[in-house]
Image (cartoon, rainbow, N blue to C red):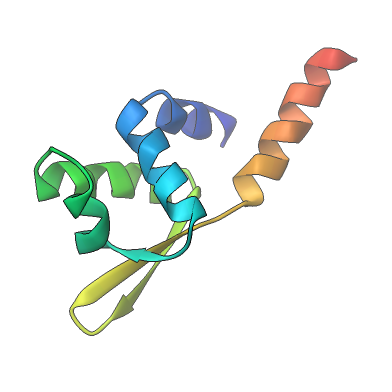
Length: 85
């Protein structure tokens, strides 16, 4: 899972999406409005973030809402602390 997390963090757009979700849950449309790329491109970024378990998604009618999942931070801390030993 660490590799998926690092891969997801390697892209500046995905890092910006995470910062945006730090402020609270957003719909896919709200996220897409903030970027100067196509909606399908944002959808791909969100898919990669979900695959890395960095965000979670819930469907409400036609909308999909995304929120930040903080579990990956704890996993990264454990992994990084392994280098300090």
